[in-house]
Image (tube, rainbow, N blue to C red; front, side, top):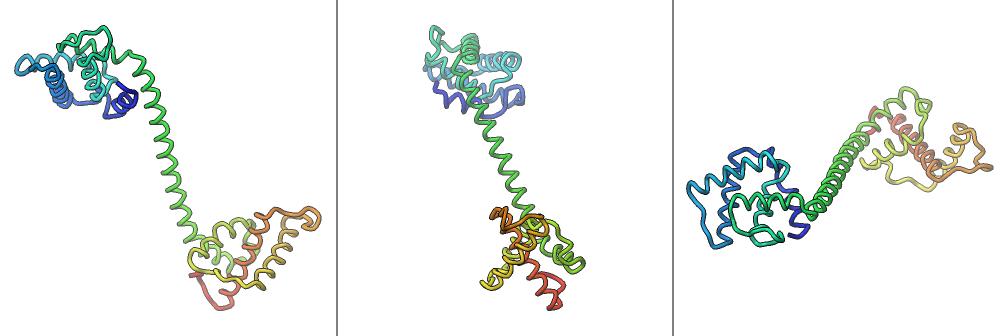
Length: 244
């Protein structure tokens, strides 16, 4: 057995304790028949039924944590002599010896760690995907709704209704851009917006731009805030009640 085989067997299907009786018996019947065939032998009828029932009972009580795929792997490994100093003759006693040997072998212990690590990684990936999908959905909703809400607030309260330039930058401005608005800003308008943004920063942040400076991201937020205000003012002057 190689590690990837064991990892795959551990990760395939549910533990025996969670598998219904009919499914277990059908699978074990197939496994046992194949084991005998691998030795050029045949088992059928009442004797096969007894072996299936005996093996199922023992597995369900002592090895309920194993998967059916693991049982199959252990039986095939046993009959082909992969377990040293263990008989390869097919019978119920040896089936149980092979499964016991497989269950406690170091290879399975190592593979179990790998399987758990991969499962944890997969769950983390799935959680990130779900979180990313939710974030994308919430962002899309924000880009659709927030510009409309912001313009309504602007009509009611004017510039004083907004305290965070980052909100107008990251949500409202981006939402307008995504809907094809404000995509062409003249150089003159941009310079006017930059000058107005610096005044707003000085007033709202109580700093001296000339003495202390300000990081580029903050300045960008104030510039975009100013561009949104100018766009809203244009809509207001045109008698528009909505941004779309």
